[in-house]
Structure formats: structure tokens, C-alpha cells
Length: 188
Image (tube, rainbow, N blue to C red; front, top):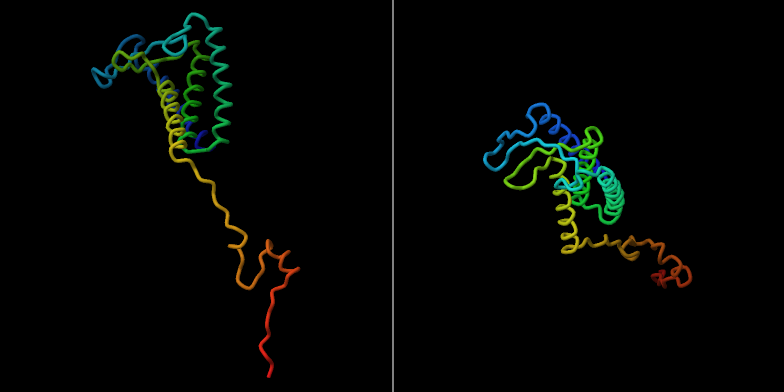
């Protein structure tokens, strides 16, 4: 659980910091080469959901975000109870941190600042990439769990717990009704 919370906090602050930096240092709708010609910083506001869908209808956007948040929270809870793999916890943390980062930006500004442009791919931000990476990590976690399932820890049988000369609690009830036979050495 600590890994999930730690990851979510790191992603949230990384997303928040990069959005503030871009908003203060790059002129909107202009391009600043980062790794030309492949990666360019190109700030733009997205009032819609993924890829700008529903950008004109805030009621639909907030309804979808609310429902997705409930699904995410219930999924995170079930994932923690299901296996608690480090990979899945980090994945859920990345999804949570990214979702909260975009939600805060949307609540403060009415839209989300997207600024990373890679080739002809739609413009995205740190939160978006964290959400996608988190989904990938969850899929990887399921694949690992399916391929190499965890074996339950074996507990030793009561016979293995018996110390020489003592009777284990599991055998105590049978030993009182049928005491072991002892032969005393002949006395001289």
C-alpha cells in the first residue's frame, strides 16, 4: 500500500511541476524543440477527455471522470487484496497520480494542459503518460501472475514440529490414551 501511495504522490507532483513550468516558460500554441524533430513542447489546453473527445460538453466530461474515479478506486482496492504485487501497486499508483493530476488541473483551469508532442501522435502530458504506463504495468502484473502464480506458503505438519523427547500438541491426545511401551532395563 505504501508503494501505491508513494508512486501516486510522486506522479502527481511531477505532473503538477511540469505543467507549472511549461505554463510559465513556453508561449501557448508555440513549439519548443526538445529532441527535434521527434519530441516538441507544444502547450495547448484540452477541455475534453482523451484525445479531446467531448471537449464541448463539460457535464459529460465530469460525469465520465466521476464514474472512472469510482471504478479506479474499487479496482485499486480489489487489486491490493488480490495479490499486492509491487508491479501492480506501482501501476495503480501511476494511474491514480495521473488521474488526480489531470483532475486538479481541470478543476483549477477548466481544462488540462497538454504539452508533449511526439511525431503525429496527439499531444499529451506527464499524467497521461503515467496513466498509460500504469495500465501497461497492470497488464504485465496479470501476465506474470498467470504465467508464474504464487504458491501459498507451506506450513510444516505438526509432526515436523515435534522436538525429540517431547510430545507435540497434535499427538498429545493420542499419547495419553495409549502410552508408549517402555521396557526398563533389568535391575541388578
